[in-house]
Image (tube, rainbow, N blue to C red; front, side):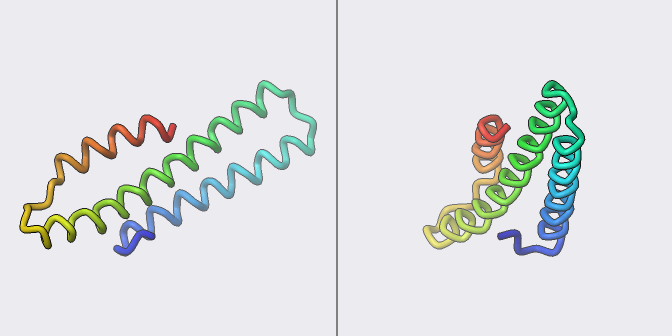
Length: 93
């Protein structure tokens, strides 16, 4: 879970956008919009959910791995974490 106020604010903003997208998708289905347009909206919704997942995962890794590295006497590895998150974000799209 995002712990800092900024992380929490960003996560909630993303979630509200996702909610708006889901509501728009529901209205489009009720209105009988053609499949091509529905698929476009579904892809956007999936991308938004993946973005939220990546953001929460990033926060979790930094909150978990950072303290573990400090306990082990190693310096936190922000570049390594950035590399890991870059790889994970490609799979969450």
